[in-house]
Amino acid sequence: MPFSVVMPALEMAQETGKLLAWRKKEGEIVSKGEPLLEIETDKAVVEVEAPADGMLAGIVATEGAEIPVGQTIAWIVAPGEQPPTDGASTPAVPSARASAHAKNEEAKSAAVSLTRGAPAATKISPKARRMAKELGVDITSLHGSGPDGEILASDIQAAHIGATVPSSPGDPAVSGPSSSVSRLEVPTTVGRIMAERTTQSWTTIPHFFVSRDLDASALNDYRTRVAADIEPSNGARITHTDLLVAIVSRVLLKHPRLNASWTPDGIRLHHQVNMGVAIAVEDGVVAAVIPNAHATGLAETARQRRELSERAKAGKLRPADISDATFTISNLGMYRVDQFSAIITPPQAAILAVGAITDRVVAVQGKPAVRPMMILTLSCDHRVIDGARAATFLDDLAGAVAEPSKLLF
Image 1 (cartoon, rainbow, N blue to C red):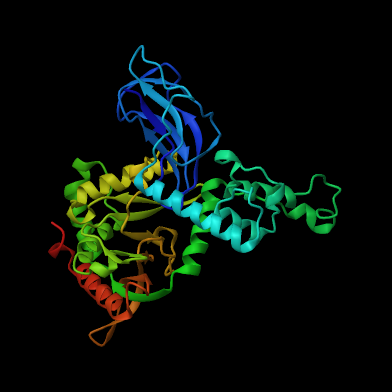
Image 2 (cartoon, helix red, strand yellow; image 1 turned 45 degrees about the vertical axis):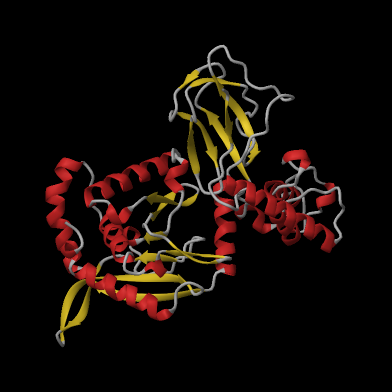
């Protein structure tokens, strides 16, 4: 029985994925779970694994193509078996999440067309229509790259770039004294989507922020102590991020509203902590996920975080590496940032921003003393978390940082 290879959906808002490279060629034998292709999605560059054992056949997508989510791009067949033909094959069935999203998008698109008076023949996603309105792109002159010529957000972006970039150096738009010191940098898909998502989060989620200044003396001492035991055998350096992933995930179990998501039907409380860790890559930031972080030992947490970081920077993340985070930690301490406020990643309800550990003079029992201090800032979705819950969480977290051995062993 042939198995279809489809463009995967990693989240509800994803419309397309860009095929970067095939790892196998037409007619080659593949094994289930083996890296089959690389795609660039709304979040990052990821590796897609083969869904079954067999022979790769019927490749219909070329490298560099933008492909709608759920569309079949190849087949895996048994040796001697032929892939379904266009006329006989059953269309690829997207995941239930992608199917529901597609139906919802179609409904919204139809409604917008009626209310705004757009031509009935123009097929355009709601996201693309919104972008066209913001950028002033005339959709009647476009032919989309989606199914049946549907106009996608990427088509609007390309049309806008084409309209705003002058075609020759003599164009008045680039002539004059400032032309030699300015240029237009076109963002990659990852960079553009990151800009869109942070804008969407900031404009649709009611953010509020709570900060706490912590003495990191015990955290430093604990790291020094456990590093001597773990690092020689584990092969991974124990970082402050590893310690915070382990500590925060365990504290979150006592604060379910912090490990939750806002949905149209209500607040979804997650029973496990899948910790997202923000990782800087060339084109932006990705949040790789350590699943079940609350039940993962420190050595294993360090190993997973190191491997995720290496894969992210090499552009080799897998879909599972960036899916289903329930909370995120963003640490800029290594860049000597004292304090910052992070933007929440939907559908999560909170994100913790971690500043650098620096020696400062503070009051200890009424007297000045030098202590390694660290500022934590919690960004919260006010629909899910109120100020008292946020403050209580930070208070418990401060207590855990002061005595890490009580949670970690």
